[in-house]
Image (cartoon, rainbow, N blue to C red; front, side, top):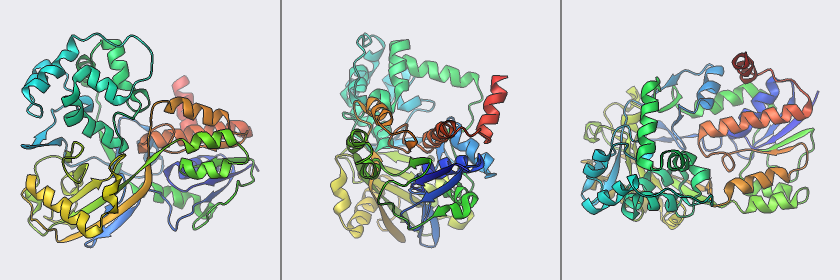
Length: 450
């Protein structure tokens, strides 16, 4: 029986191991911490179990939802939709059906109150500006500023898009993070027209919900994967040197994988060291009974850089209503990002006070929560900077046969993209081993081929 060692028990490592085990490979998963799941865990605050990491995945990228169905995990959609933008005059709701926060109607561009009159006029020039002709890679900020202007970029679009990477739009690669926007300019000559075309396509199909999760929380997915693996998963098992097996899958952060590869693949290790990570944290705020109605209709808001201690805020009690939360407002504030990590050095008490105070300035909640907690995620968010796609290619080209890397540092930071990358990695490993695939994906592919 072929053997495989998977280093890392987050969603990427668990998914790879699950696929390999289903195909008859003798799998050993080694996780350094005391629990599986990586960032898909929970924290108990005021007697409530809350997500400590991502609370959902993009439903229109099907890979995570399909895995949940295979694991027989029922899915649920948010109980509210629509996000707000923090402005100097209060919260302003993003326009409905605006992909990536970019309106597809010129009237909406000119009327939206989230920007000044001059900012709206500059954004509208996107419709008449010539498209980029050269093929040189561009930062996300460079693309947005060139098309929509500085105000729309910094105060409206960057908080929404860069926040997904805890990044800086002027360092993130546009094609590596949001290739759709690059394609919009190339095919439509305009981001506004690209948004309009995306809306038309969505209108012709039953797109369904934008986000989903397993009922009860995203951590149910990694719990189910861990349960399926059983004693193939070892916890509190830190790997100090490259394991020996027919296949080794490094599903740890890039900087940890670099240490394991230093001797076997020094060039790949050097490239892995070049992937920077940002540190983030979450401040949980739970308010007393009767406060949930103070939250506006929607899922939360995002904040332009420097305007508040948090980068975003999710109204959990709106987004994921649950009986045990009763009528309490339950809120998650995100803190820290690339270039804003110094805030994480503040004490828990100071972070809680600052977030609660700023939240009370835009939403009619008490100045102090009934319960609160802080959870930090050091070096948790890989930064997809200029050259990222080429760097990933060089990493994989530089790996010895039988060694693979997988995780959110390579093919997308979201859960759905991570699951897709894990399934593709498992398929490549099985091809190397000469082992036929027996998982659901291979059956689906055969049916589609017919």
